[in-house]
Image (tube, rainbow, N blue to C red; front, side):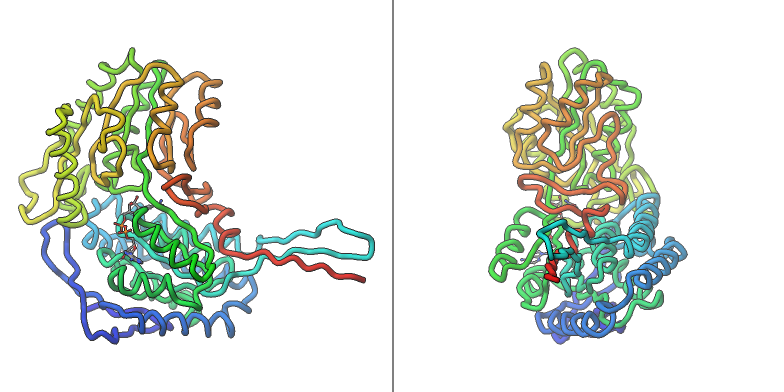
Length: 476
Ligand code: NAD
């Protein structure tokens, strides 16, 4: 049974209750986590506050960097163990789980090196004044994390927050806690002082909400659905707490007739099947210029038919979805497609070894999806690719920008001027041209516009977000 991690130790919940941990590959429980309470959150926030006031808030930036670098090395050493935990918890194929563990190490490595490079400025002002700016940490930061990439999302927000001198209280998804509880113990081993990093598990409406409303939390970083993002923003607004929202997406991949299709096809497929489509930046709409609509669909169909889905440990193209309700959600979208007469062009195969009790879904390619249909508008969060044709740049832009989201976009064309025109006009936090990084790379600031959220994580931008700027004007 797992405990909360508060002040560098395992703590049982005041509720005396637990939540079962389910393996998505067979639908069976195999562990338990604490069902946290607002009192547990309060204990974690108090431990964090004490650590900030007495230790971490006073630790020299270079020393913070050394601790984070040791943590990065420990994560690398324990990458297989962490990957195995997250694999069982989330149903990730082995390659994906291992890549996520190594990405976590990389986040800590990047932010370790950035701790002592957060400079302020001096500002020329009136005669007789010296004016300077300091970047100061917020203090206690709250991090609410989803289940799709627990290690990666934890790494990018907690790494940046600690590097900037903050302390953290983390609320993982109730569906994916195991790897993060283990990382928290590695952080203590790396020398992170007691209270700097606390992990409290439980349901969103119980502990997540308590964290969002806690008066001593000075910054909130939320990654999850737009629906819950709205609740978090409302809670934050009531006490004027800064908040970063990393929400959903319906990311377009726009393929022009002059594109290099040999490069595009595997990338288009990977962008929707990676992590079984449960990726905020999944390329879930493919917009194809008329002259290549049929030939590209044919190539995509061939690729989809070759995809295999099975238990996480088999390390196939796709593992199961996270839980039964997510599987049901994908089924609902697909039955809507059937009712609307949207053709299924191709599907992958669920292998015979997949237990019936697991949450499997074959990747599905739909063609001729009407742009206003919910299959082209709403985030499905499963391996379903909606294809539609377009005629010329202007229509491509209208279709691409025609949803409530704006997280990531892909553009495939050899025309340099068009690459820049498209990149400039796409309403999107990131644009990839002739590749689809799916948000990859710690160096690249990441975040959305419109209902995909606001604020940026990753890169130096994230560090700025985890600080507040103080202006000091001295009259001589
Ligand atoms: P979710 O919004 O249901 O849950 C996210 C987190 O919020 C979980 O820890 C959950 O317990 C917590 N939560 C739920 N209700 C809450 C409440 N009332 N108050 C406080 N916290 C609460 O999202 P999910 O299903 O875990 O994740 C899928 C969503 O996350 C998708 O929409 C996806 O696009 C998005 N996502 C975005 C990014 C990004 O970087 N933009 C990355 C990954 C996932």
